[in-house]
Length: 258
Image (cartoon, rainbow, N blue to C red; front, side, top):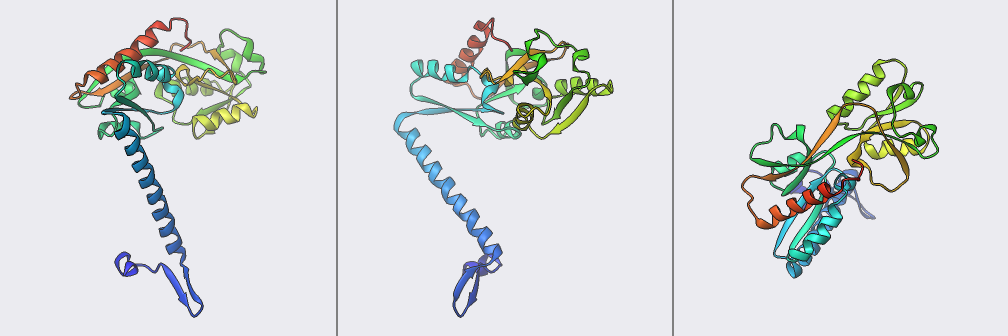
């Protein structure tokens, strides 16, 4: 009956029994994944119903994009213990997910919000461009890196770089004095840097401050305006309080490198 409904054979039958066809094996693997997703959804629902009355889903590209998020969650729970803060990591789909109202709060660059309908934009902080290198790299001890100091080096580029960063990368490559290597994403770039394949430039908000790499300010005018977005119709006091708390943590971090 199932094979008739879906239109392809799931089992290959023989006198010795039956075995999954290649299409059937793929079909079963998807069903297994759906079952696991359903189980996780049930578990999360059970957790939520036992402790919380409301939820705020925060969309961000990577964990370190909002460095003070864990501290904000801890402080927020003291005043709003019945509201759950749920980080949702969406490297490329965060904006679309937010616009579909699947999340309540979006970390974004200001330039991304120009064509977003029905949102409120809350300024958060300005971030500059940094050079990322191994800690044993000759450039690691510098206080500021200039374009001239990158001559002859290999620069990792690509990986969904925001427009301001792409402008810097293209300017450096156009000099003809710098080699470059295309990298698909930020994690791959950091792996290549750790392997000694090159160096890279990145927004300061991606720094997890783990000390694994040297992050040195790069001498350029480009900056990244980091903001939080909420839905205009969402007037929950808890959401407003959480946005204000995050803003205060960043404003108070005067000496924090961004």
